[in-house]
Length: 352
Image 1: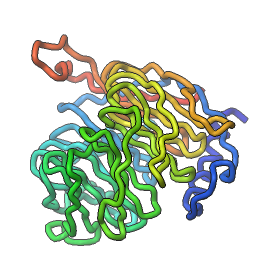
Image 2: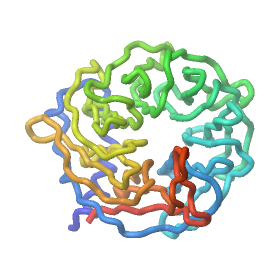
Image 3: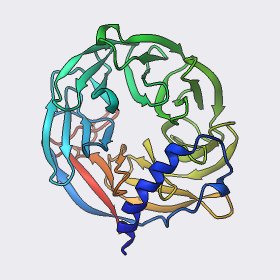
Image 4: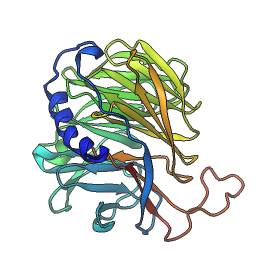
């Protein structure tokens, strides 16, 4: 059987195992990992459309990609590259979270200081939830059945009840003390969020809705991307000084600091292979994995395209999806160069 086929079969087992692993166990007790595959560019999907992008998210139930594009969110079918839906009339969108058991999706809109709620089957907007200032990263926590939205300017988190009427769904605000960036949930009652200016990761107990710990990103400055291995209790924080800071999610103990590319903005984790990925704007994705001696090492550097700084992974096929575009020469004073009109694309990186 080809490696890609083995990965597809085993991913379901990995998901089942992750869901059943409720107690902290040493890494040696959680079973062997599959070989980490090498990746190659297999397809470029020309998507087009207006607007810059931020996060891209894979929704596994329907197998669709959600791409945030400032004033709208494009829903893309990966097999064909076709835009099957477009959620319009938004302000400045950043992230998308999914609460499948409520058939609802949630979009953080940084310009309207709200989270837009939509129906996952029809893509129709249901309403909006008022949140803090400049909402950005957003995640659904299955343990508490709540959505957590992180607000960059007001430096706090908004807790949202996904079952409630949207204008009454804001149920709590959690102060963070500094600006948040990426976030992940471990499925066991904890949400973790990068504190980019604080060089740390904050730990939120979703039962009490309070910050219970703050872990320094040892050796890492400006953490931007964040991924988690929920089985082995490991956090992977991609930092702007071109390192991945790897921490024990239960204690904050530093486990390793390894080099990555420049301009990191997102990190992903593949539960079946145990490989973490950091996507960087310099056109690279760094793969990092635990060794048999319980250490961590860089397994590969995947070459993508300039600007491909965010990503998502299909846990069933292990394919990586990265949005980017062609760019005009950067003008003086510009933080980002202007995108050439109509050149927005999604790169498809597949296991060899």
